[in-house]
Length: 226
Image (cartoon, rainbow, N blue to C red; front, side):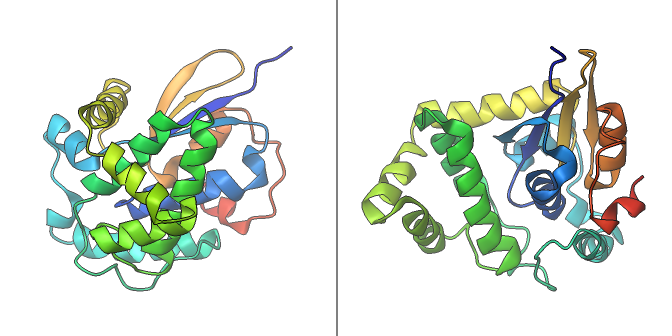
């Protein structure tokens, strides 16, 4: 039996392009036969490891980001607010630790992580709510997990040394696999070959490398990348 192609998508909720990549991988039928794993990292930590300048501190690029994210959102029908979320970019370390806590605590970790990412991305990028603020983060988790008690349990776990180290290790793994920004895709095709790809604008290369060119997708956004 030929093995399925695989994608590991490293992400941080602060990145609009990681959100868009996540939305496409979750919803586009071209990836229906791909094993996909979503791994939370801390983008700030990755940028430090790479000695990389945050894009919002680069003149002209800070303005380009807002234009480009809307282009991709329109191309792939991704729900996203027109203006950047308030006080962008926020410190997402508390949010990413929560995702790492969910990843660590559930026997069905990917299912739980996906549900959390769906809720957090909707709150932040579709509705423009400040998920980095404790009250909003708790509210999203309460709705997701069925109550404040469950939310507080995850928030407490996110402060443990074990979970903090897990997020560090996830970030270190992304760096070791070549990441210098997000979204970062580590892909393995059916031949067992593995390569890394950066950026939602390189999804066309991901599709070609994984041999998905012949898969059908009704999304016209692929004309932008294939």
